[in-house]
Length: 401
Image (cartoon, rainbow, N blue to C red; front, side, top):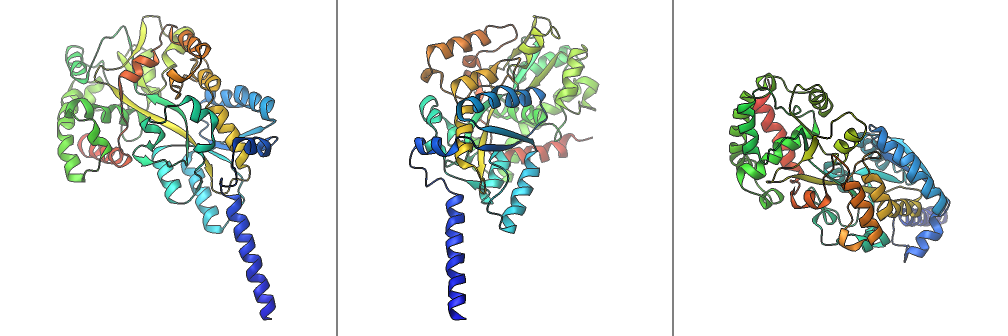
């Protein structure tokens, strides 16, 4: 009986060691080993599927190139972050060591939840050739995601930045926006908080100009300290609401509704994080060429989105090949095109070849486009995730009708 118990203990130990081996990148000594193992795998990515242009980019351009380069079959499964986090949490609790997903589109608070819950495999970014060749290793968003230390557990996929759109509208700051609203009552509004991500970004972006602070939003503050800092922003928006569309009593429910109000000529400005969206709508004839995107001279919030590998991914080598391809300059340039996605590339333009720069110039020269240089020069850093939550609560307390 003792021998049987001993054998069971040994087998349990061996299985445990094997399971740990399956959930670690430590066995990959170099990229050649990743290439050899990842060829021919089926890689399943869980990602938000609410944008058909992004879906087409993944199912067409990305899938075709992965098949041609590595014989990888990309299986895109539409799933919002809260759904896949619940799935992984349940699997973790149940001891599921071999899961069904290999990649996650993730960032900010969802990354924090996944990382702290042990739902991610890593570190792995040191293995990625494109990331370590074409990207600025000193860029803050390669080390921190909304104030959360990345530590190699997610690879950057792209960047986004709050961009405004108007018909030859020349507003350079929140101060000038208030002046414009006063002289054009009912012509300015923003998406409702806390429902809409863009509306929250528009509100919190005002903190940088109205408080005169920048770096403080990446440091630790108490709730009381943050509320004191918020007073100038609250005062500003109480004044602005008086002159907004519907006197600020009713706000658009979403960015999409704000876009519709702008297209219908009911307001003079819309906004969003898709840097190529306006150019695409100009090219398709929805907007006149006089409609242009712009950013405030005082800056607009920029954030980044990433790719991570679940702790129980069955095809880790294939997952790394997919991440590395998505971080490659050609894939980054392709998704920047306004008729593809309009997403901001994350590579360092000083590290890429001339033909890549030429491709960027062609995209940026189209009507309704902003240059990466302009965006970078006017990019405000993202706040720590906790402050975003506090801002939602402050807005509800002060402005919810």
